[in-house]
Image (cartoon, rainbow, N blue to C red; front, side, top):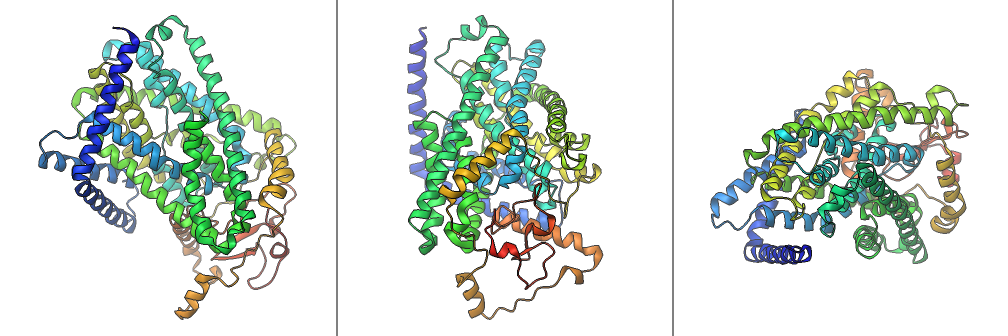
Length: 592
């Protein structure tokens, strides 16, 4: 059958499935919405119970998957007319993920990012995210081909495509535990940064290999080295273009907020920032042909760096709260879809799932440990004039925890559901089942043991020391761009006022006559100080997506003494070592 005829047939089938899926939403959309809302309510109640009883070995995301699975089973039992099948479920999931959920999840990650820490480690994050993803894809694909006699995946293209999509890590449960325990910044920023950029790289690899316009002979005739070289070049070009586009759009948004003086209408400013996530993502994806994930991430980082002068402290705080809650709801929705898809699974993929989980562990290990050693070599060379404790060297404990953070999530499942018509139906069903099993088992085994291994490996948490911002030529160039262009032209010359003058929140509290009393940490029993700091940090992150809720704390670097480091403590901003109520130079100068 001619290739173009196959594409036309597949397109017609996809359009028919999409139309039927929306017909179902039109007929029973209200009932479906009620069920989804009820599932979220149950998930919130169960999450509260887990937190109250300190049950760390059951991740919340796994609970949401289980709720989605049970609800989907009840739906299929109640409505036996086969309205939903795997194809229709995948179409709805993919559309909602790319159009609604992914933009706000990625934007909030950039908004809540500690910019200086991220930029300081950006070269090493790119090493793990780009080369690590390619290595993992090659290892998984090679092992699938080597064991092809034991399962149904035989072709080189199918092995590479599945290796690309299963390389997309999604350590939501791990990062939630990191935030709850306030893990040291170095490990947290590496795992978070790698997971975000890794998703974009994996999606690019998958879309290239899954392209319906490419004949299967393209992958059979070309050598593995040629295929890897072509794809790697495409990924690097896409990364560069997407980063520049995201930075440019973020700068335009920031200048716009400054020119129209959004301080006069903080509500409009907050909504403008929130909606910009969707504009950036879809503008980058559909009009510019770049990665919406990376562009949205860097756009959020630019707005994060310049929002306080444009929105006031109160506006920045409320904006952080809104973005964090929307992103949390979107994250839960993605895992709910995993539960929905799990109801269609069959025992066909159990054997292949066992191979997949083993191959992913091997691929993750062969990517993480060698690249971590390479990063250490680069750090030692760059920071050869610095003492060892300031080089941010990755110990074997850090390497193990990075390997341990290789969970899989909703993106891997949606990509599996999006496999083209060139994959045989039975083979696609096996791959989908294997992906669902891998996601659930990894969540339980690795997501549930994160806290245990953090304590076993003696990773600093609770109130860890700040991370030294080690410079490199790349980071120095980025800082030069910040000082030369972003700070004067994007952020503007407005002084960063870290006080709430005439604050609405402050007036509400005063009118309600709510008694507020600060208890100095020195009066807390010594045994409970670590728990107090960890609890407050976890609560701040859960509400605002960051511990520095008013965007005042930016870490420390060479030439910035510790006593001048701006801290955010107990809701008030003060310089470290400065008594409460006294002034400091940081109150008079602009926060960097």
